[in-house]
Length: 353
Image (cartoon, rainbow, N blue to C red; front, side, top):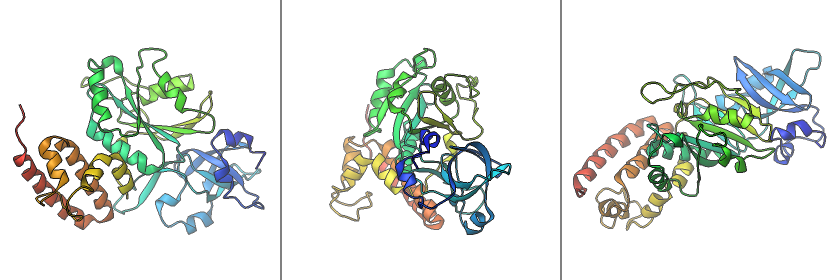
């Protein structure tokens, strides 16, 4: 594998090459984009369109087994043909997942093999701590390292207050501040980007992801739009694509975060809400439901103000949504119980002036 100079620049590391048999005659390649059953790939032989083989389709039973942007695959380059043939998919080191379209409860990989994910949130009307908790949870669970990126700082009059608020939910996560009005307003991102590493930008529409990527690319490759009259963003990215950055490394732009949801996300939730997990471990009873049991550390923290009711509700909501993906019927029962519990808690909360 010493001759794979080009694809190594595109993130092909030893961990991927170790999964290839020595006598394998197929060509390693990476998925750059996908559209209508075809994939655009890159290998040391160049770029080419590709499609999965009939054998691959026959052996695939779930949507998540198909290649996604960022995946590494083994292909028959098919020197005499127009398109290469994808024969197998190499194991992923990270993956962002959503529910597949339609009524089936199947997962679909949106992007794979991402090292660092920039979670973008604008410092104007887009600012929403509950949404950022969801972003962080999904990022941790994907296997990538999350980094919070607060955009449009030029539109914020209380930056220090906003940073203080984000620090209460972003445990163990770097928080960066950017602006598109200054030429070097994106430079805080640069230390996280290096050759062979793949980064991704996710966040709501209009928060400035495409603008930041264009700055990193050094050219206006992605379309950008301004704000609507209601201070919300227009959605400009319509598909996912991997780009090689001139300074080294790769970047994947993704559509708005509304595509993503909980999918077997217990690990990500626990890591995002470490404060609540630690409180729950202090409850008198191991099977505490955190409603009316004596010695409940959660109830005590809510009463004293150590734990904000909004953060507790956010935790419960994400846990319930995750349970829904595992079991629809029990989710509806849990949802009804949770709403009753929240109503009782709010009535018991002391009024603060």
